[in-house]
Image 1 (cartoon, rainbow, N blue to C red):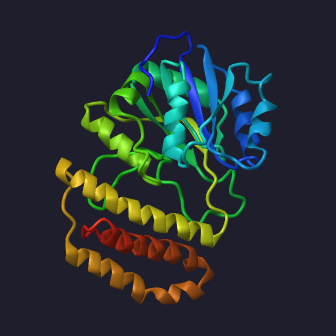
Image 2 (image 1 turned 90 degrees about the vertical axis):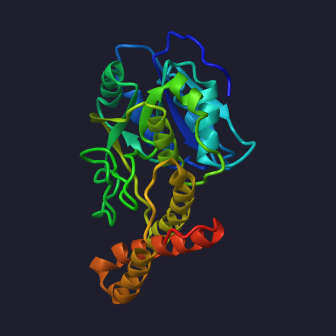
Amino acid sequence: MASDRSSAIAISVIIPCRNAGSVLAGQLEALSRQQCPRPWEVVVVDNGSSDDTGVVAERYRERLPNLRIVEASRRLGAAYARNVGVDAAIGENVAFCDADDEVGDGWLTAVDAALRENEFIAFRTETRKLNPRAPQRETKQNDGLQVYTYPPYLPYSGATFAVRRHHFLRAGGFDESMLACEDADFCWRLQLMGIPLRFAPDAVIHIRLRPTLWQMCRQAWIWGQYNVLLYKKFRPLGMPRLERVRGLRNLFGVLRRAFHVVDPQRRGPWLWQASWIAGRLFGSIRYRVWAL
């Protein structure tokens, strides 16, 4: 990554995109309504899209005067795309949000205010606006930082946070080998460097959940795998050891509740848990560490 640089831009909003043409306009529309007392920019990072993502972004050049569209097609992955975006950014701070989500009214003002007092902040997330039906999985960052409980470790945020750009560069950015959970990995590395993560409740982002059970299960399966990799990476850095007996109890508990799949009210939560456990089992084999 390029070295840090001085700039009149206070905040660079980084949006990684891949085939996001159907949803990107909603995010850029929300950003075009933002107000901020200090100069800011939007960096849209196109991660090898084959749809009209670039065309959609181009339509907002007049409404977002400091909009830049950056190509990042050398390799796929949100971590890589975000790193490319930060490398191109010229802001003192970098703020991350996804193409399929939407920042809330007053989000940028709240981000700016929080960054004047803190160096690393997490946004409040909510799921009702962009999910017409009651979501099958609630966000865990609605009233505070996400708490990592299995095993208990440092708090974290999804890729909905802002940080001083020089801290991001000093930490080495996102781990591009991780196709999921790279946000928790980054949050923990920065906290271990002595940079506390603070919650910014007035900076709201509306989150779009996976629309189908299949997509939800696939996400849980991938997250389960990469949670195992997190465990392997951070065990030497103070993460407590998982008990094998507890992992087996979790597995058998999910199997015993398999009848929930026929109940429309219980199906979603059970499928999520079953997919997550299956991902952890696969990850334990893949990464050669027991983390069920």
